[in-house]
Amino acid sequence: MTLRNRVLPTGEIIAHPARGTLTGNRGILVDREGRMTGRQWAAKAWICCVLQFRDWRKPLTAPGTWTPLFFLDEAVALAAGHRPCAVCRRADYTRFKTLWGGAKATEIDTILHAERLENKGKRLHPTRLETLPDGALVLHDETPMLVREDALLPYSPAGYGPPRPRPNGATIALTPPSILAILAAGYRPQLHLTAAP
View 1: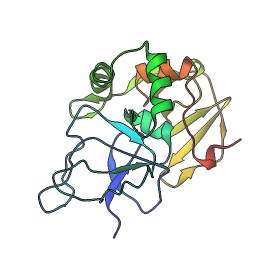
View 2: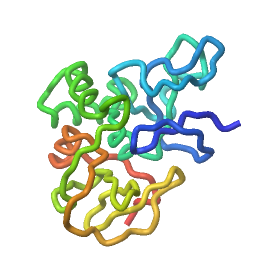
View 3: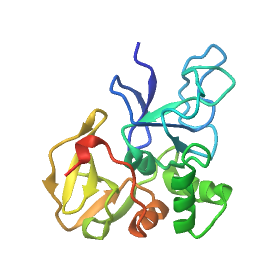
View 4: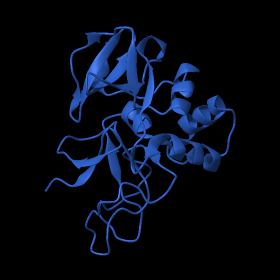
């Protein structure tokens, strides 16, 4: 059975059979019987983790504990408003935090929470394509697309499609503004193999 635990760049959680390359969480999203609820989040700390860390094992639908979610790659996790985990991705978290200006995790989480949600849905950020750094995700021609150099790569839960030339002009950023600034400062997210040049 395919569980509803796959996160899209729009922040939505869906059921999809394709495997993700990273996991993470937004708090407890299952009920007392272990069934996924309609909640999209239960905590402001939205993190992105490696699939395996030490010998830790996490049930997918355990009540009373955080619910594992899955991402195609880190660019998708960042677009949805997640940040690197301070435990299993310590080096990435430290770099992310340094580029943020040394803020505490709780401060980062509070700012991201305001930037990712609006009226219980995804907050969208009007911007221009020519200003965006590599690793950003945009909603262009009503399709989520990854910005990579001079190209846009259409997103799907199974991977990115063939690159299209990146035009100039108006677009909608899915990646929150604070994370766009981190990407512009040099943070390089882990990308799915379908995003390779």
